[in-house]
Amino acid sequence: MDSSRLSIISLLLHFMFINLSIIESAPERKLFREYIGAEDKNVQFSDVPINPDVDFHFLLSFAIDYTNTSSPSPTNGDFRVYWDSANLSPSQVSAIKAKHSNVKVSMSLAGDTVNGKNYVYFNPTSVNTWVANAIHSITQIVDEYGLDGIDIDYEHFISDPDTFAECIGKLLFYLKQNQIVSFTSIAPYDDDSVKPYYLALWRKYGNLIDYVNFQFYAYPKGTSVSQFLEYFDTQSSNYYGGKILVSFGTDGSGGLSPENGFFKACGSLSKEGKLHGIFIWSADDSKKANFKYERQSQDFLASQ
Image (cartoon, rainbow, N blue to C red; front, side, top):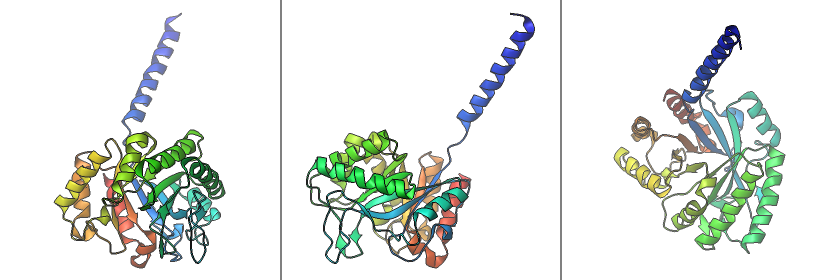
């Protein structure tokens, strides 16, 4: 091979190495997530400010496996849409994703109550029938709405932790294996009636879970910065290896509020390389204040 051809090959390899180095050293964009649509307050995707310098996930709240009747009853994994579908429709999902390339849309399962009244219980007839029904109904919703991910937010249980772990784990495995969704999350909080279920799921199927939307706003009001950081370390140990997202509520709930040092705590976590993202409950509640804290959260993440 002549020297000129060798020089060209050498030059090409040099530029390939430089390009790969740039790709590998590119900083990971921080993630902002927001629950939306649970309270029928006519909030739309387009109402919420979106910073192009973060990854942004909307979480439609909620899809629930209960009948939509005056006396709701469980449907053993047959999920139906309970979010404000008039304002958060398939066409609106498509429009917001077309307008903002950094936006993805997920749906959250279960939540606290049906129509703000009756608790939503995880109450499967059997693992196999619940999983089969859930796969079928969730796939239909994902296809209809063009969704990207799924979030698990059961908060009440008529079942044991192992059954919960098997049902949810098998569901997540199928959805990811068949590329029905590209990411998954869970939304636990620190309560003795909830914790065993999510820890059982994490121990067996944690490799299938991309984000832990930990509900830090379920801690008492008046939480201090130091207490918040201790809570974070505790949950990082519980969900070892997981991407724990920090959070606050705009509904007057507890935890560490932005006014009392939330972003100071985030700064400390960021310096230690522990800040993976922020999520807020919820857009419905933030609308009245014109999404002040959504802007502040995204600006903070983009600056890190």
